[in-house]
Image (cartoon, rainbow, N blue to C red; front, side):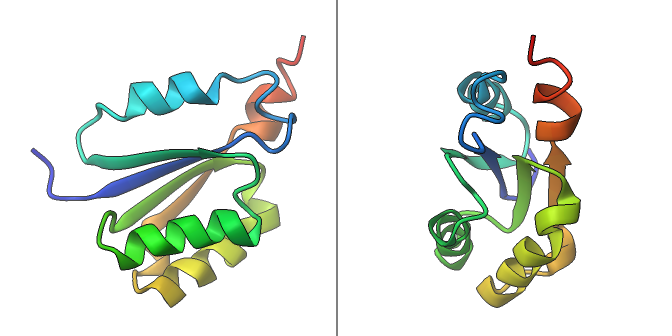
Length: 109
């Protein structure tokens, strides 16, 4: 068993992702993966509430690494890494996967 406590956070991005990608099914699937301690689906992870949830989970010790499934990291990578550092973890332990531009937008039909 892995000692990492990975939090996987998936964003519906309003309907930009959630209308095409079943993020709930993804959350269910990854929740059983080695090292994944917590999964969460939100409408807008980039909002203060979305970031606050991740920050709270870090501070409470639920997770010590973060994977975000959302829009392009070009938009929010530095914002999320600053949040991770503020919450007390190395910001390099946060990764964003682009499921908006590279998944939902190209498969919307």
